[in-house]
Amino acid sequence: MPLFEQPAWVTERREEIERIIGQYPDRRSALMPLLHLAQEVRGYVADEDIAAVADLLGLTQAYVESVCSFYSMYHRHPVGKYHIVFCNNCSCALMGGERLREYLKQKLGIESGQTTPDGLISLEITHECLAACDAGPVLQVNGEYVIRLTEEKIDALIEDLRSGKGPEAHIEKRLLTGHFWDADPNDLPKVPPEIAAAEAAAVPAEGTSAPAAEAATAPAEGARAVEAPAAPAGPEAPQESPGAGKEGGDQ
Ligand code: FES
Image (cartoon, rainbow, N blue to C red; front, top):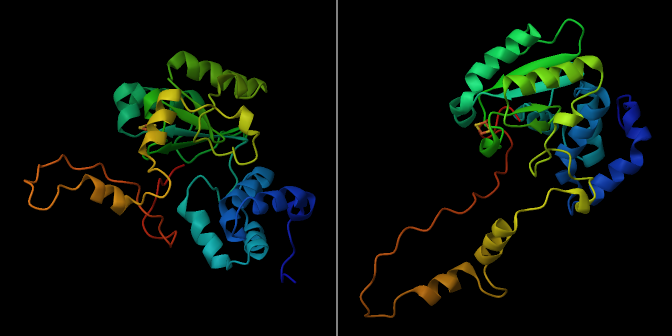
């Protein structure tokens, strides 16, 4: 029995909570989706949300807090109805992002970390890449991408936010967008065929371990070794602790 008053969303969204948890072999893996759910309901993650998620997943509040504070896509304080994150990293900056950053700040009349006086729009300038360098300059509105920014695109976006239309007409769905865990797979953006083929070719055939594959290509004993180009590094193993270095920082 929890020693705190549970937030209403724990009861009201029970079915959804169970479905999210059911997607993982270990319920603790549902931590980040549940933090997203809490934030979706309240607009930010409050202390009682931290406690509720910890209770739902059998984690300590300290652990949940450490994950929540590690990723700045979670807000621990109220933000505007629309939270804009503007990418200030290299690729976007090289493609005109710096000028557009200043343009956006001027248009909104606020600095990074501030919210417009009407509470409608918050702005966050991030120095972390938003993982859409191919489409820069980019920003995100409530976690969804607006890409290939121009002054005209910014004007149209802000006008639609202020008029109540919302950002939908400007959003570009991308695979890294944060809310795909409950989407219909048929609605997801498709991986381009050439990338899917390259990924499939990179997966070792069933029953072939990586060392075995290496052995199969190793020169026979006594044969002259031929210097091969270094293989590209594989993905790093996931880290056990969420506090080991600031990841992404912003989104
Ligand atoms: S640098 Fe902006 S998305 Fe990567």
